Length: 330
Picture 1: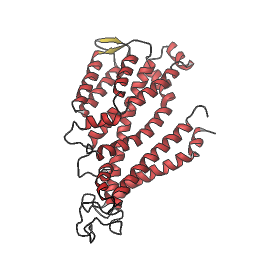
Picture 2: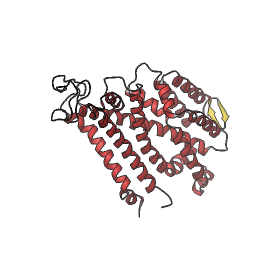
Picture 3: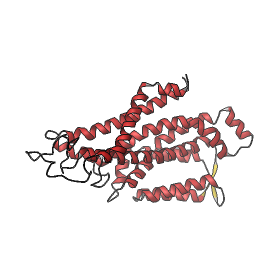
Picture 4: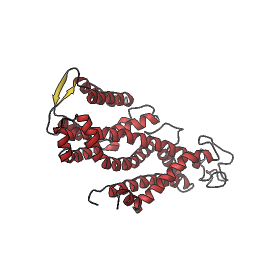
C-alpha cells in the first residue's frame, strides 16, 4: 500500500481533515452569511427581559455576548484571525527550525567559516527581540540567514556551528514556551496580528530544530549523500536535492501539529490579556469574557471553547495521520 493510500485510509486523518475543512469554510463563509457585523452592538434585540444577553435564536444563531454583539459573527471573524496567525507563525517557525536543524546536523563535528556580518546580525536580532521589536528581529535573522547561505565574502570566523546552534537552542528551551511568549508579548503596549504571529514564530522553532537535526545526522551518513560530497557537489545543492527531501516528512508532521499549538497559544495569550487589542474578535478573549456569564449565558463560554477544541483536535489528528503514513517502518 502506498503512503498516499495509507494516509487517505487513516481514520484519524479523515476526521482531522474534515474538522480542518469545516474550520476553513467557517472562517471564509461565516462572516459573509452572518446576520450582524462582528463589532456591532444591538442593545434592542440583544438583551432579554432580564437584561441578559439573548441565547441562540433566529437573529443571533449562537446567541449574543455581554455587549450584545453576534457570537456567530465574532466566532467566524476570530476563526480568520486564528488561522492567519497560526498558519503564518507555523510557516515562520518551521522554516527557521528546519534551517537551524539542517545546518546543525549537516555540519556536526566540523568547523565552518561563518561571515562576521551574519554573527553580528544574529546577535542584533536577539537584542531586538529582547527589546520588544519582533519585526526588526525577524528582518535581522532573515538577513543573517541570507548572508550565511549566499556568500562567504568578507571577514569570517571558524565556528563549530552545530555546537553553537544547539547550545543556543538548549538555553532557550530552558524557558517554558508560554512563559517565554507571554514575557515577549507583555513588552508591547499594543499588539497586532503581525506582532502576535512574529512572536509565536520566533519562540516556537526550538523543538523543530532538534528533531530535524537528529534526522539530518542519519541522512548525512547515507551512501548517496557521501557519494555526492565525494563527487564535489556544492553544499547548497546537496542540502536541496538530497537532504531536504529526506527530512520533508518529519517537517510536514511537525508543521501540522504546530498549527494546533499556535491556535492554542494565541487563544491563551488573548485569554490572559496579552493578545490582540479589542475590539478585534479573538477566541481566547471571548472565552475570558464568557466565564463570568457561565450560569446565565453558557453559550458565551462553550461556543469559543468548542471551536478551540475542534481546531486543535483537527490539526493534531492530521499530524497523527501524516506521521503514521510517512513512517518508514510501514
